[in-house]
Length: 247
Image (cartoon, rainbow, N blue to C red):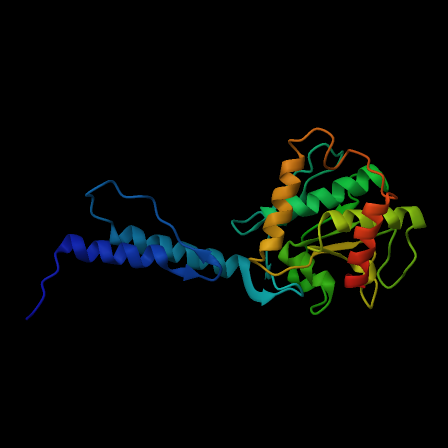
């Protein structure tokens, strides 16, 4: 028996399929239709085409070393935008929005307050894929999941840029992040200015650490800007355990 599908049902099916299409790493979403209103197939096709054009312009399809996709541009309808650093005397830094942003800003903030006061231009975020070496941790800059802090003071390939007490604080900052951030100074080829997200996309550890950090911002006496005793036995043990795992 032949089944006859109404025009409304057919168009609804087109819209439902279009809404679910994943183009690159973006899921296309369309404005909600009013109840009982026929979807507009021309609008559906237009939105799909716009998403495809955007993805071609922004996405590379190539992961950085930590597994996040590198992007060709920033501030251009992708995942990477110039983000402010609240409370710091710095210009915004281009990085991946959301949980990555929360964690990296925490690292930068603690560095500023507890290791060395930062100035404009001393924190570098996203770099174009063509300007980074693939296969090295610096490629994480191109996916918006890393920052360089004072790169002119800590040149790539050189160890020993931090005094012992500074490195003690640096290790404490990493312990705050529970292993979701890696310091380039621990790499085989050291890059002491580089701090990268060290878990792949979708890892629940990043979600949990970002939630913890956001909670600190609403709790007096916690978070960046509050000086902690990095030499306390409990904090030192946590930092040493993580260092043993990451080095």
